[in-house]
Length: 330
Image (cartoon, rainbow, N blue to C red; front, side):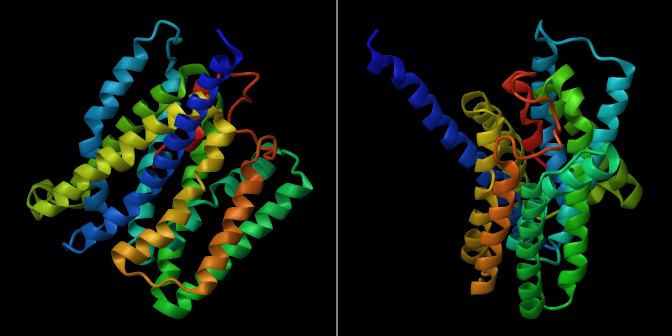
């Protein structure tokens, strides 16, 4: 085999990986657009979340069954199951509920920027809970990220009013909840695999969501919504929940976790323009500057070796396929 042929395959795999990572990042973010469209039909955040989880459940159950049958997977302990219950409630039920609730009050561009503070929350959790040391570059990245969000927040407060305060607080709670999920999931990802963890956690989250729904309102209401709501929910479940997970896993396998994580910054960039195009949300120069500042801070934190608060083992200690829990869907 010639040298040209030998190098062609890695280059092709990298191109495919970059395309999968970019597509996954944009699809993850697009769930906010779909939620905004659903709200126009009089539904609320609990309706949106319940439909999303219910319709994606069969896909994740099938994924979990497939992953559990892999011969190389170690059997799970009671402690593992207990942690999965906690992670499912934190990472996919509580975080998603607060996120969709916040979207009732804030534009999608601000929502996505706040959620991209996850790396900074993980860093701070490592400092205060695990006594990790933080490099100077990480503190700079932290300051840059929050400065950018502050710019966008103040501009949205000026343009859209005080309801931005409540919505931003809810989305901030969603980001913190998901950061706790990331901080707690590292060793579990290594033991049982990221795909199996995501599948099981999504199943637990669906159970928590439906329990909440049964307590909060008549379950028959979920089957009496306008038909477009169900169509948008199906798109959300497949294209913005299940499909991005598989795309992200494929990207990590081809690129490594570090590069795939860096590609995720395309999400908030895409929402700035998708929100303006599809929802008519205003875009100002200050918002664009704030977006660029936040992305700069996130890029500093997601560069290989930049984060001193490891969520999972690094690539030389664990296989790449077990890393992508950091970028799983919410």
